[in-house]
Image 1 (spheres, rainbow, N blue to C red):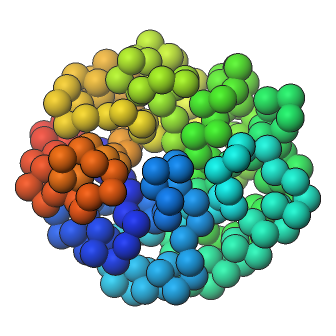
Image 2 (cartoon, one colour):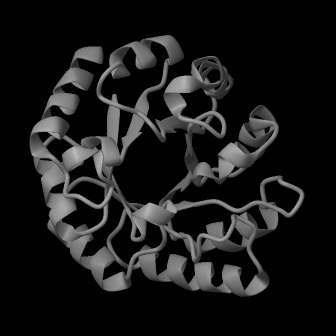
Image 3 (cartoon, one colour):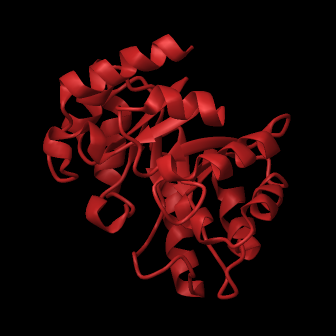
Length: 230
């Protein structure tokens, strides 16, 4: 079981690694769902930890529909991240019709220089997620989809999550369950859905507050409970 934890600063990154996280999603603007952090922070976090660092590439929080200028910005950020020591990027884009923006992917993916790619929760705005997953499977760089299997919390979408996991089996794209996950009940959620990767943010922070530091005791207990699932 892979445990991914959101980090917004070097202190988050160090605490997460020390208390059982397997991978980081590095972002800024956590209250807006995550935006691209500065390149200095990316470089320093990549140096500070030994676990993989995946960096958000998202220029604004207005929507997941991006203009040509937005995509140029994302391309510049992707190039810089590819040289930073990070292990991957987290990116997503939709068309105005609510489908995966393959034009954006075909612009950005060649710039990753071997980085792995997670398609983020823009996926949860798709009407047909199974079709979306099949579209993403055409791109070898995309290794996983971060999803709550719908617009609500992941723990309220167990049948849909299980369907995505079943669709992904044997393919190149894994399902990374996230949004609204809590340590309480996570083992049952995993057993019912079959997910092999989980993503935590505010639920492992002091007071469940997204702007508070990571709580080492909560994260350590979660990591230990997930080892039991394996």
